Length: 456
Image (cartoon, rainbow, N blue to C red; front, top):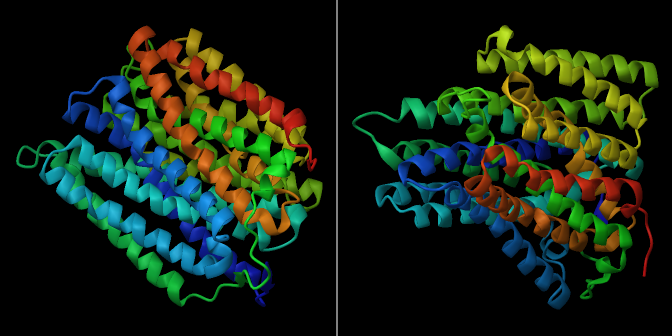
């Protein structure tokens, strides 16, 4: 793979960050769609989680097709370049958003699932292209820092989507004259238009060229790297666990022994879950950078304070109801210090904390259990970036191939929520949290041993 480096990597990174924001926004809307469509079509917990199955299952199919093409005709992105791949992904996602209109018109749950799959096919291409692209835009040793920065903006999208989506879908467009599935038509037309505008922006933006003018490899060589093999499963369990918790969070908050909230009110607290991931990712970007230690930790405190206030004002929450979040934010800060700016060590420590919080949610009640589950977002924050960079470390010209395999394992977001939904129907929402609990056990293994490089 050859590259023509631009004069300014920062401007290129800024352009790519807009992509991370957009797919974070549209992905987080599934947490609103799941309870919304559950009510419209009178679905069980298992059936409602088919929303996530369709969305993340399409990631698996799209990535698998990409991988097959990379070992038969050669890596598509290496041939056409990252820029053209990104534009293609944006157009596909826009098409999926526009399909929500006929899905609502015909009131077909299957049509909705198909539209979500189309959005996801587009995001698959964006993920395969953008994640390694960000990693390549600078020094390898600070790749985790750059990805955490980009994922931080991804989390801004995740954070504001439940608030905006919850308002638009549950309140603004849901009226007596516009009942049922119709309230999603206009919002998704707007989101589709945003994807198309972003595609036009990328078309005319100056981005560095990474194309395959070198020999295009047609072998699955990436699979010979031990860290990639274990990283594939780490992505599967991480995404599956994060999505499982997020998509079932409203159902958890509706429980009488937790908070007894209505769906529209509960959606505000989903913003704190994804907002925690946003705070942690921006803090992680600083923590994993090569900045001097004292300056680093002071900046992390400032970031945490500013972003907490941002979420607080966006959600219009009462401080008496959210001060618990500050406790978990403080613990998260010291967990970063324990991580000592080492991606694998930080991943391991954060996984231990998440397991403790899940146990609190499983066996606890009231505000403590409620904020324990919401606080998991803070510790999920750096996991994608750290797993991804550890997994592709040393892949060189097989980086895009390895990236497609990692993105393929986003299918965890399709499978684990279904398992959690099934367990919720059988044993209740509390005990369904055992599904993500076991996922974090694997992440502990990856952070301790699985990330270590070896070529077979």
